[in-house]
Amino acid sequence: MRAVRLTVTAAATAAALTALSACTAKSDAEDGNAIHVTAADSKCETSAESVPAGHVTLKIENTGSQATEVEILFPDDRIVSEKENIGPGTKYTLTAEVKAGSYEIACRPGMKGHGVRQKLTVSGSGTAAQRNPKLDQAVADYRQYAQDQADATVPLAEAFAKAIKDGDLDAAKKAYAPSRLGWERTEPVAESFGDIDPKTDTRADGLEKGQKWTGWHRLEKALWQDKRIGAEEKSLAGQLVTDLKDWQKRVGTASITPTSMANGAKELLDEVATGKVTGEEDRYAHTDLVDFKGNVEGAQKAYELLKPVAAKNDPALAKELDKQFAALETLLDTYRKDKTSYDFVSYDKVGKEQRKELSDAVNALAEPLSKLAAAVAK
Image (tube, rainbow, N blue to C red; front, side, top):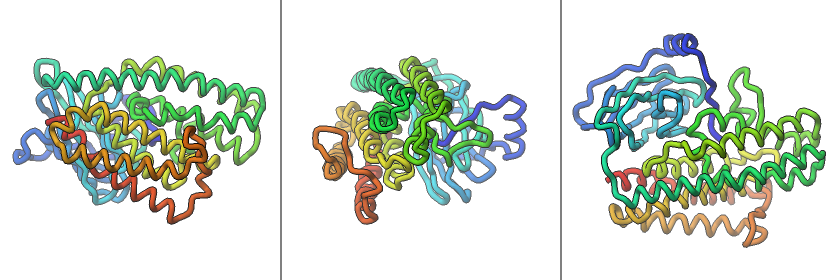
């Protein structure tokens, strides 16, 4: 689940940018092609407005008072690469691969709204620099993996929707968590389109002003907290399936590169740290550990596909990632009721010390995983 982005008109965009203050550039000759991005509560300063095609590195610093998100965007708002939840006073390095063309760098204070944007021109022959053929195969395999997950999700979501339309509360509860697994494994791909995730996976506290609450978590609240299935819930169940079919059709058009795979793997771990470990994601159903498992599996899939190149470029990093993935998987397995299924204990039964242990394991993996993009970009 990510913070929502609503489409705005050109006039509203101009007004918003005026109110927030335009992005500005500053001198930065000392770091070659790296772009320094200074994000604050009402501004987004970048050190360059153009770079050559190939790999681009954003050195991000949040000097504001709230968490922010920094993205590289296509003109139609599809995401090339992003980093969410950059806390106040923290820094992050984001590596991405870009072809020649026009882009924007967006800073989104509070991770909501249109944000403050800077134009970015990428020059060159029209394509990124030639890369290792093994990485091309990794991208192709990951694209197929993402499509397979979407294809598998739709019938599970249809079963969830059918139970709701039938008014079967118990069956709907049982179908809820399984219908989310494929989404959780490949969520960065869905998020790259910008408009699908807000409709399907937004929590109540992630809504923009004026946004109607739809999707899984709206239905989760009805099933577990309200214990009610009414006409509205039945309509929303049908809309969820429609939105997921839209995602299914669009997966094949997603922009996927080796660095976006690596960054996406790290984003999945961030999803765990900011939603699953805290118990905020499935706050009514308490099925957080199922989503947790899906996020970890998706991150590991991306890593395994990139590993042949990452291990050659940085053997020590690959060794550490193997170790930390194994440790986290072993720990997660202790919460399974059945080692061959996705039947995990209810997260409200997981104590404070146990949650800290899970958090520590996630952090131990997230740190080396943040270096994967740089390793495959060498």
